[in-house]
Amino acid sequence: MLGFPSCHLDFGDVWGRRVMMGISPSTFELRTDEFRDLVRRSREVVLLAAVTGAITGLMVRFFELVVSEFAFDVILHGPIWLGAIAPGIGLLLSAILLRTVGNSASSATTDEYLRAFHDPEYPLRPRAFLGRMAAAVTTLGSGGALGLEGPSMYGGSALGAMIQRRLPAAFRGADHRTLLVSGAAAGVAAIFKAPATGAIFALEVPFRDQMARRMLLPALVASASGYLVFVALSDTRPIFTFESETQASFQYRDLAGAVLIGITCAVGARVFSRLIRFAKGFTLRPIAIRVVLSSIILALLFGISRGLTGESLSLGSGYEVIIWLGTDEHALWLLAAVFVIRLLATAATLAGGGVGGLFIPLVVAGAIVGRSVGEIVNPLDPALYVLLGVAAFLGAGYRVPLAAVMFVAETTGQPGFIVPALFAAVAAELVMGEQSITTFQRAPDRPG
Image (cartoon, rainbow, N blue to C red; front, side, top):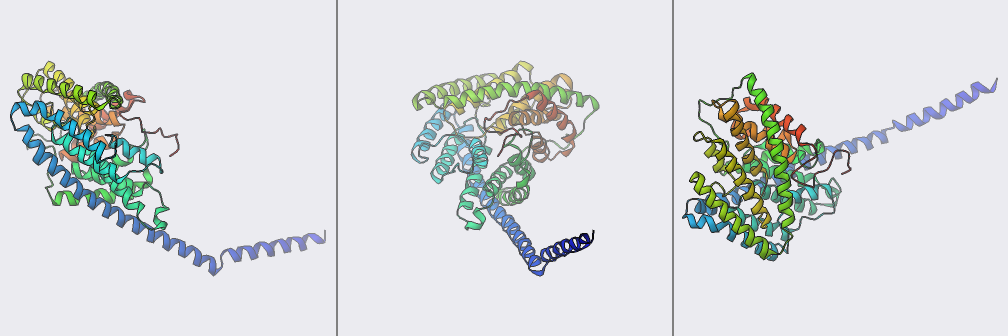
């Protein structure tokens, strides 16, 4: 009994000495140094993300200028025979560029970003970067039915990855995705003039039903800097504009219409996803077969489009289709025909080895579906239903409901559409199930 207090005292002394050692000045100095290092590294990340975004914004502006304002404008307003043969010539040139300049690189763009995001050992090589960007100019500049956002996103992510690989070892030891995500976000933000959309899409698209939240700060900074550089060299107008009297307003029945659009768009997106996967598989065929067959299909679709609408709606990323939707009333059968033409044109361009994105083709398909449903539910407000279709089809196809809704708000300057767009996007997400337009997305429960 007498030994117990002594043992207790000895234990207390040992414990006290350890506590005092743990809070000694040297420990405070160590933790202060760690905190200072963390602050310094955070500032470096922000600065590097801003630089990456600015370089990406400059690259995207030059890319858009060459494709849209020079090459494609000549095709769109040139003689009819040029519109029929130009996409096939573009596919041939793209195949040559990918094999020679790109060292036999694939035609993938967004998928390359996803592969590099999930695999730190997967390289985004400079030769492949140059080959894909050059092939994107020939594909899209000749009227291929793909979007400019794919090469913009891929180009930004490749630039970010190459910058990070050349940084000092201390920074290279950080997450390999820091500048990869920054560049991707800046590319999307610049081409759409939508900084929030760029950041959210770059974080949302790698996973199904989850976001890569740890990259939020560099993605936001890079998106902002990429956007600022791009609009400084162009303008700040939203890519979709409406007449002044068409303001964001909706009734309660439009919420039911939004759910209907979401369900319809999800069904369409499932069909579109399967068609795109088939087209991607077809790119493994010999070059001569896929280029010739795709060129013939694109020429036929161009002729059908001209015959039905009098316009070249099968060419390009599809902005002309959205303008056409807002001109006059269109019969439902004609809307369905244009929907099929656009889906087949996108698939044929992709199957032929064309380089471009699928974001805008999804937007265009959703706009057509939304207009079709709007003709039945509320023909007096076509703009609302077009945008609901955009949010639903895009959100379902890439499994990015948040980015889709934000895209509608930023690119139209109509934030009042957000509430019904959320209804449409959520309904489409539920009906879409596990389908996606890309096989490189991962489920939330998988590592990486």
